[in-house]
Image (cartoon, rainbow, N blue to C red):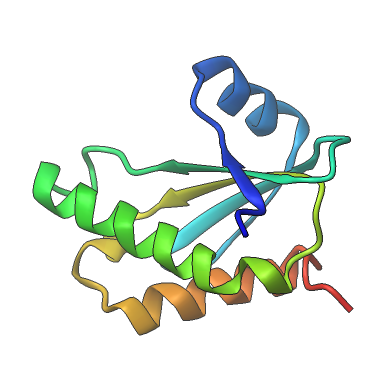
Length: 112
């Protein structure tokens, strides 16, 4: 069952940047904002600082898969924007997943 939609438009990202709260670690930055719906919406941002298109696509896939595997453990009703830092380029899946779970804990998004 899909619990999460995507943030796609620039104005949606800007709104979360301006109104949301951010937490960061070595690999990722995460902005979170309540959206008033019963679903989460995920946006992923990987800039050219991270690497060329192949590297950026890989990092995007790692972040999305990490989120997908853990989305059933999250509270619902939030807009989440994940920004990859340059250190993310050479990272393994386990490192990206660990960084993402760390930020989820810092934002207190765990269900329970």
